[in-house]
Length: 639
Image (cartoon, rainbow, N blue to C red; front, side):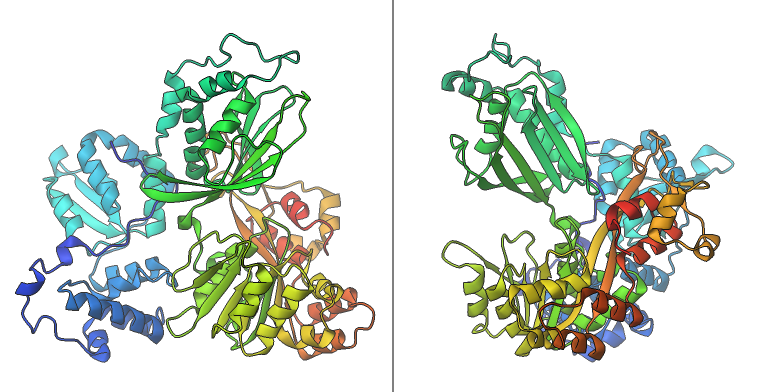
């Protein structure tokens, strides 16, 4: 088939053509464009009534959808009000679709992923490529077939996240099947089935396989070589295979869900390409037939704001590519590094993949435990005060902050962010771009005059920015920010050491969240751990009572696993300890003299209900979501 689908695809949120009136705007009657009052529109829509009854949507979310619905009506575009709710990023679209399917009497199909994948593979010859393309486009797939007395009498079952769409029925009816049924299946599961059944084809990898692997232009790359001259380097750079290798790496990184792409020359003068997947670096390719300078120059030539001939400075650049119909942004970081050959100016390149499809807008999907989630939700619903996310680089702080912002952003509040750099563009939020003319401190001072309600500060780096951020929190603004510390209590100590006054710390902050990301076991191939390491259990503080209440698991090593491909892990979730600023916590901070008593803070916080990172890790391990070794790796000795 001609369509290629990326990892975890999603259907395009659009208004189906079949639901448009179809008449030119000038031909619409005046009655068609009469505004429908909010309450009337709500009462008329049976799906909305069900959603309200089950507390799936709030009045503010309905009002937002109704505003857009009314605008579309004035343009003579007809679409059910409930369907507009599926475009609201603060809602889980599956919660909407399942209620709609129920209202219109569509049954929900229960399937096993492995069996469904096998069935789809087995029946690929039953439909032509054009039909498969249309089914993938509409997010509908055949998932079973019940044999009848004769083969033509077989009953087909098709699954889709939205069986109410007329175009889905039109497509299935066009197949001339005697018996079929269209049933509901969660959008997330349909996406998995599509991504696994119609894996993205990396056209650049195919070109690499077809091209000759000859790059040395008659020269060996040995320790006695001189640096290749400019003309020879240009000649090598212009070879299409180098460009294909670079483009293949970008596409493959997106397809595999990598967060970063690492490119650098090793001690042998070969180019290594690694991808960071689920927090770990994995080697994707080792190229020993090209000069490192040539390949690194290709990367630099394809990056904006980067000078290919500057090999002694740190540089930052930017790349944009369309990958399977989606615009993906890449942030490029270049650093000069030492080389075994003194005459060679070696460089390391790290490319951050910025895929807007991976942005989480639902805080509940971060993976916080119930205690952390309740505290976090309460803190971000306050009219003012500060919420601090702390943890090392790569611990998911920015992801959690973005999800938190999406919980509170509405058309009625002015939300401003100060980030360096701006990674993900967020709807309904004004994101301030820093430059050499506007630094972080200047932006924060300007924000005070920009009538903000909610502010996100990317990071408090020094006393000046910390005091300005705290001033925002103390003057009636809800403020989100991050710090680099190991746990929640040490964030208080860090601010104290920056020179921020204890009374400002005590009364500005609502909550400090220390976060880590831990790898999740693959549900398909994980195995019971019947002989866990005693030292690891002891170090993590497991009790006999805890161990008797659940089953520990270890990673499987099945290279044929269709989900993890032998990695043993698939995806990550958050571990979080939440330091809620109660009256007791504030008093401890206020009584600080030369330093903050971190141990005292921690003890008081635990008594107030805080789960430490290690306790969270133990809980996740006992739920069978990760291994005890992974908990130890992520939390260290934090008990």
